[in-house]
Each structure stands twice: as C-alpha cells, then as structure tokens.
Amino acid sequence: MTTPRSRSTLAVAALRGIGFFALWLVLLPSIALPDLAVGVLAALCATIASVALLAPDEGRVRFAALVVLVPRFVWQSLVAGFDVARRALSPRMPLATGFVDYRTGFPRGLARNNFATITSLMPGTLPCGDGPDTIEIHCLDVNQPVGEQMADEERRLSRALVPGDPHG
Image 1 (spheres, helix red, strand yellow):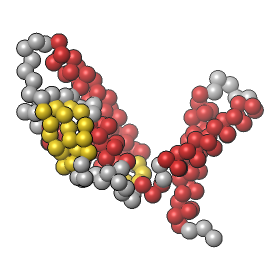
Image 2: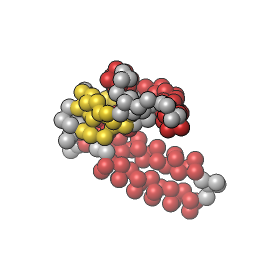
Image 3: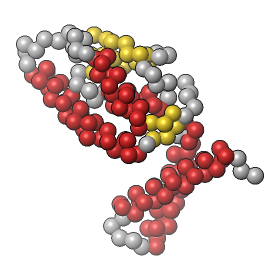
C-alpha cells in the first residue's frame, strides 16, 4: 500500500527523471538506440542521486516565479562585477568594509542556501556566516542600505519557493 508521501516522492522522481532524460536528448547530436539506452541509464542514476540529495519534502520551486527572477539575477551579477572592478581600479574609491547581520525568515537548509547564493552576486556583498536566524554579510560599503536590499531579494525569492520541512 502506498502512502501520500510515497506517491508524492514517486511523482517528483518521475518528473525529475523525465527532465534529466529530456536534457540528455537535447545534448545528443543524433538519436541512436545505444545513445537512448545510455540516456535512460544516466537519467535513472541522476534521478536516484537527485531524490537522495534533495528530498521532495524539503520544499519545491515555482518554476514560473523562478524564471521571472532570472533577468534580475543576471543584471545583479553584471552590476556586481562592474562595481567591484570600479572599486578595485579607482585609488580614491572610499571603502567602508565591514559586516552586517541580516535576520532572514528562511530556515537553515535549501531555501537559505539559495538566498545566500543569490545575494552573493549583489554589488559589494558576500554572505560569509550563518547563524540560527541570521546571515552574516561582508560588505565593501556598510553605509549602503544592505539590509533593505537583502529584504527585497528575500521577498522576491520567497515567491518562487514553496517551503518544506526545515532542517538544520
């Protein structure tokens, strides 16, 4: 007898397996039977690893909401790169380096890790510590509104994530 949780895990595994196999098909130069057999095996192995490393009950992503974040993510990455280069190449660029503790609503785990990854590409910031309910951010200029920027990014990301069971 299957439980709702095991049906959910099977459904997630099936979707991931289909996605991995579709990726395999995209990467193939031609479709030959031996290539398809290897693709099925590769997709099966990737699916098993995926379910083991990211259990379905840890949350999920709203794909459409995540796609909306991509242009902003790319833009923030470019702005961050130019900002750091400008500061590095300008001898008169004042720096006020330091640390800011940002209180996040994300519990420890996947959502907080994703948030830290996204915020690492914000201009002049780098997450470098993790407390029970805070993330320590190293800043090139602590006079900037780092907390407000982090809160804005957290609101945007939280629209794309459906929380699961927190871990830590």
